[in-house]
Image (cartoon, rainbow, N blue to C red):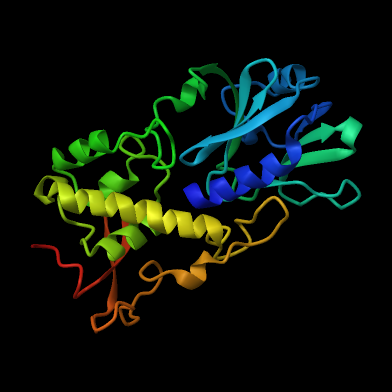
Length: 280
């Protein structure tokens, strides 16, 4: 599933092109691509609206419209937002097409697995109402580190579960949680209440560090399900130290441990068996 770096890559790619574009027509090609709206609603409301901003919180992004509404885009497992040449043949998994007649352009929402969606929402304090329930991510001005540290310190849950909890800190998924915990030398099954404030701050700092580097690399792509607006893959997968590296030597100098893959909380985690101890 695309995480914050992948969504930010798409957001920044859209921002370079679509500001000021006026939507002239909307085609809904799959009913599951629209949530909390009828197909009729988007077709009725969006034509004539201009895109004034492309914003994001965590894994959600939205197109701000000139009527102070937001067209929210959630990529789900395999969603893509593409800016194709209009003469190109449409992608076989095209779900929504936004036409920009005066620019002879189109915005395509492509989604093979149909877990992603678009939805229209009103704003509250500059944030779509349905996104307000999600905690700010580490790149937002609204982010409050003291609040996040306290939530983790007081929790009986495992630290990785807390990193994945979008009500604690949004945007982090399985890939970057594993990478941040490896960098911080913290086992993913350590309980929040057993960590010191300094350890928690270090984990958060490593989350921001690894996601910043992933953004610079255009995100992490393992297949063609995640691409940027030009259809290009990211290359941060070449820099992964823990995630997907089961059985490989730990890349930390002089560690000599092995990256281990273990299943808990209903998902796999990757960590070093030597430098990420479960206790201590």
